Image 1: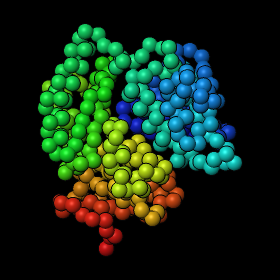
Image 2: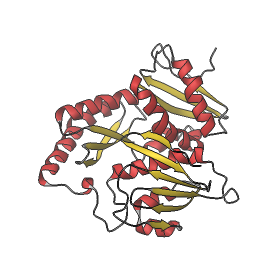
Image 3: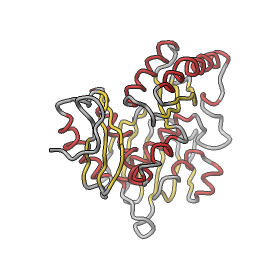
Image 4: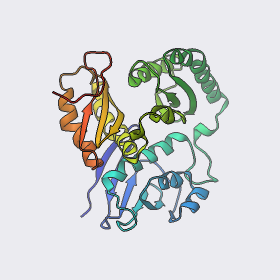
Length: 305
């Protein structure tokens, strides 16, 4: 008997529907995938030639095939003999890939008309120009003064969503707080904007992980996706945000920001929620440690009392 698991993933309410065949799972993004029919991709090369969405899904280790339908995406994972992968590890990455695709403005199949972010009407172009001017003349100079950087990536007129690429590696203040300030600024000066979404700049990961090899692992990527798709949306109602700082010797180090920094329930949130989720999704992690200075300032890595 099948069961449905509902996952709130940023702007998208994605449902997952397990199959009688444990190797197969259906994802319902709540919006149109194909205009009609279905397409199955069993070969990564074919997927990359024909479908940006399927290609993005094949980037996930453990994905064997992708089926696209009118309102669904079905994933078949590799067998245990090919590559032992659990759904609890795959699902956060698949959810993030689907969400990122729809935010990118790329078509589901090559040859289709791209989403609104790919080309703009005269009025939409005026909005884009206003966003770019605001980012370049007001936001970027201030962010660079604090050791970061930001750049415009795309705008979706239909949803009013702007995507900005952000390098937060050198910031002296928590990245989440900076993102809130940027979003408030953009929405104030460009009223058409409903939401600002942030992505890492291409070279930010190299900057961040040059002295932290633990952040370059598959486990680190799984934790980052888990934080983005499940944990941070859950604690966002309290103004909180959690970032992965490093992985060393089966220990994940995280930092709390926003409403979680200095909160009396921070330890309970970590031990009863965050640590349980991370250890369940990434079995090699044996413990999760909070490196936040909850009194303000900066703490080195530490083990709790």
